[in-house]
Image (cartoon, rainbow, N blue to C red; front, side, top):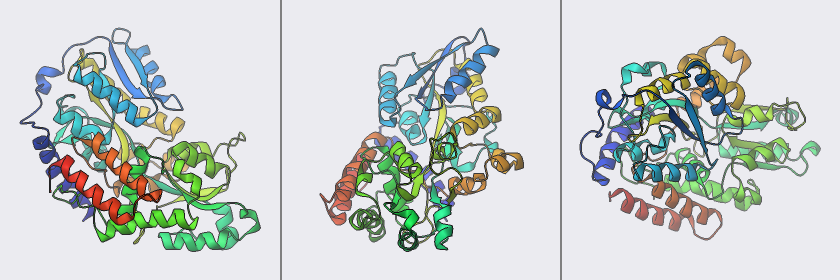
Length: 429
C-alpha cells in the first residue's frame, strides 16, 4: 500500500505542482536538442566533510583533458545551496552546469524549467533503487540521476543494551522502556535516552515527517492535498513534545543538527540516536575521535504506532537548462553515478548508494554489514512533500513544528496553523 501511495502522490502532486506554478506542457529544452555541446563544465554541490566530490572531479579531469570539470562548492547548508541554485536559474546564468539537487527540489526546478529533461535509456535507470528514481521524476519524466540516497537508522549502544538484557525497540513506547532499564545502570550515569535533529532547519522537517508517518499520518494525502491536521499527525507531534517534556529527549537537543547529534552519541551522552548512514563512518573510527567504536549497532527506526518510517533523503545530478556543453554534462553524470563512484562515496563518506546491486553484493555487505537494513529503510521511506514551492513549504513546517516543540503552541494549534498555510501554498483546500 505504501508503494502505491507513493506512486499516486508522485503522479498527482507533480501535475498539481505544474498548475500551481502556472506551467503547461514539457520543458522548453527537449533532450534531443538540448543535450549538445562539448567542453568545460562546472559541477555545483554543497560542502561534504569527506571531500568526496572533489575526488570524483579529479578522476574525471585526469581522463578528460579537453572536457574539464570545475567544482563549485557551496555551503554545507541545504537551504543556502538551494537559494544559490535558484538565484543562478532565475538570472538564466550559464555559470552552473551539473547541479547536485536535494531530491525534494526536483519538482520545483523541473516545473520552473530550470533543469533539462534527461533521456532515461542513457542512464540504466532500472538498475537503481526504485524509490530513488521516483524522486528524480517530474510528470513521469526524468530530470535527474540519483547519485546518493539516504534512509535513517536507529543507532544504539549495543554494549549497554546487552548489559541490561534489552533488545532494540520497534516503537517509541518500547524505546522509553528500554531507556528506563539501561539508564539505571551505573555505566549509563548521566546519559539521556534519545535524540534526532530538532533545530529549525531542514532536519526538523525530516524528523517531523518521520514522527507523523510513524504514527500513521501524512503531511499530504494521495491526492496531493495537505492533510496534516489529523489525530495521527497529532500523535506523532505529541510524541516529540512529550519526549522533550519528559526528558526522554534532552533539552539541549532543540539545537541539534546532524553534527550535534553525532557528537552526543559518540561522546556517550545519548543511548539512541536517529541518524543517516553518514554517522556510521564517524562512529566506527578507532583514532580516538569516537567513544563508541565497537560499542554500537544500528536497527530500524521505531515508530509511534509501530515500526518507524524514514524520510527519504538523497541527491540527484541534474543539468541546468541554461548551461553550455550539455553533452559533456551527460557523460559526467554517467561517470559520477557509476558503481565505482558510488563505492567511493560509501567508502569515504558513508553515503548511501542508489544502485541496487551494491546493496546485494556479498563483498559490500561484509564490509558494511548495515547495508541490508539501509536498503530496507530506503525502500520503505516516504518522501517529503514534492511541491513546486518546496522552499516555502519546508519553512512553514519548521516554523510550526519548532513552536510546538518549544511549548509556544499546542500541538492542536500548530497542526491547524500548518494545515492552513499548506493549503495556501499548494492551492488545495
